[in-house]
Length: 450
Image 1 (cartoon, rainbow, N blue to C red):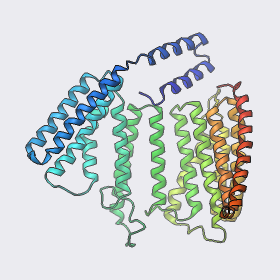
Image 2 (image 1 turned 135 degrees about the vertical axis):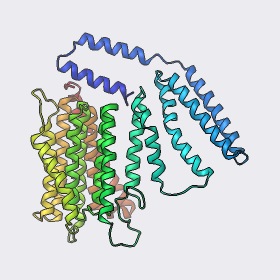
Image 3 (image 1 turned 120 degrees about the horizontal axis):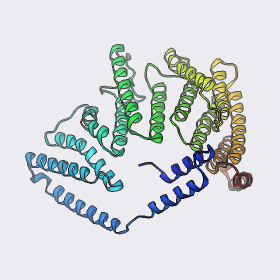
Image 4 (image 1 turned 180 degrees about the vertical axis):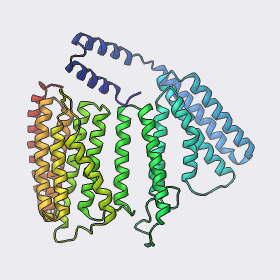
C-alpha cells in the first residue's frame, strides 16, 4: 500500500515516459486499467464495516461495565482469545487490501495492549519504555514476515516512538537529555552511562533503517530519514552534552541535516516533483528561521560550546560533501544545482553569523533577501517544470514572509481601528499581487514539462 497511490503512479508514468521507457499508448492503457480498478468498490462494504464496528463497540461496553466482576484469569483468557482470533483473521484476510491491513494493525498492537492489561491486573509500575521495547521485540517477527507492509510500517513507527520517548524523557534505559528547563541543574550525566544509552539508541536507529530498507517503500524511508534528522536536531537543542547553545551553531546543525535528508531522499528514488518541493521546503525553512536573528540585535546569540560544535560541524561537513560531490546522472532533471544554490545560501548565512563576520541584523537582512530571491527563482522554475504544487508552496512561503515582516515592523498599527483597516488593505494588495503573479506562472506551467 502507498500513500496517495494515484499521485505516485502519475509521477512514475511521467518519469518513464520522459525517459522513453514506455510509449504514450501504454501510458493510456495503464491509466485506464488503474481507473477501472479504483472504481471496483462495493458500497455495501461500508455498511458491513459499520455494523461490525457497532457490534464490537457493544461487546466492549458490556465487558467494561462488568470489568470489576471478572477475575484475573478470566481477563487473561479473554485477551488470549482476542489475540488468537486476530491472528486467525489476519492470516485469512491478509490478501485483502483494506480489511487485511486493519486486522494486521490490530494483531500488531494487541501485544502492547496485553502488556498494559497485565500491568493493570497486577498493579505493576516502572519505566514506561520497558513495555514498549518488549512489545517491539514480540512484534518484530510479524513486521518482517507479514506479506503486507503495513505491519512493518507501524513497527518502524513504534521504534521511532520508543527512541524519542526514551531518549528525551528522564529515568529510562535510553535517557540522553540530562534534565529539562523546569528542573534544578545537576552535576551532569555519568559519561559511561550516557555513552551506553547513546550506543543503544544508535542500534535501534540502525534496526529501524534496516527494516525500512527491506520492508518499506520510498516515502516511508524518506519519512524515517526526516524523523532521524529531527532526532539529531533534538540532541543539539535539548539539554544534552551535545547541546548547541549558540543560535548560529544550531543553524549550522540544521543546515547539515537538511542536506543529508535531501540527498538521502534522492538516493532512495523519491519522486521528481516531491524531491523538488522537499529541497525548496528545507532550505526555505532555514532561511526563514534566520530572518528572526533580527531580534538578537544588540544581544548575545549564546556561547559556542564544544559539545555543540562537535555535533554540528560533522553534519555540516557531511552536507557540504554530499552537496559538492553528490552523484548526478547524465539525464538528471531534478536540477540539483537549485538545491545546491539554496542550501549554500542557508549554510553561508549560518557560518557567517557563527564566525562573527556579519552582525545579527545583517544576517536577518540577507536572509530576507535570500528567501525572496529563492521563492522567485523556484517559482519560475516550477512554472517551467509544470509543477503546480511547488509553485503554490513558493507562493505560500513568500506570503508568509511578507506577513511576518509586516507584523515585525508595523505591528504597532494594530492598536487602533484605522490601523486594522490599513493593515487589511496592505494584506489584500500583497495577496492580489502574489496571486496575479502566481496565476501568470500557472498559465505558463500549463504548457510546462512534467
